[in-house]
Length: 186
Image (cartoon, rainbow, N blue to C red; front, top):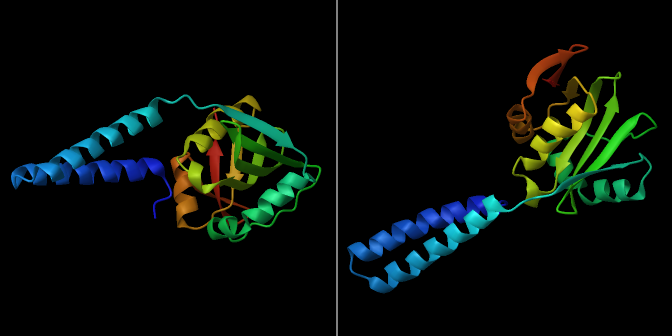
């Protein structure tokens, strides 16, 4: 039922450690050996996950891209769960890009430039298997800085989305008497 493989491996490792110790305490060697093996497997894969080099690429697209429409339609239900008020209104002023993680389109950013150095992010969405904050850190710490963006505004969403924004460094602020999140870069 877990969406993240890292959490699953960590919880599995903790459970296997307890069962291995339990097996030793009650002299049930098969229980101890099997769970000891599971511990080694989990440690191996966790090490593999944390040491793997990941490649990120930003692919900027036009607002009328067929793939953007398809992606938004395909993930509409999940997007609405986190950002119930989101409605795509792409136009010539829109800044839209996919974040490719190891060449997989794992995230989509839809934004509008408010000025040369201010941006309003309407959608910051990452598909379920990649919600480990790496894409957000990559985008907010690298991409927007390279684009010389100084301030980013974002709509609030559900509590999980708001928690994500706070982890990325956003703070609650007001814009035109509406609640928003703001991030100052640099």
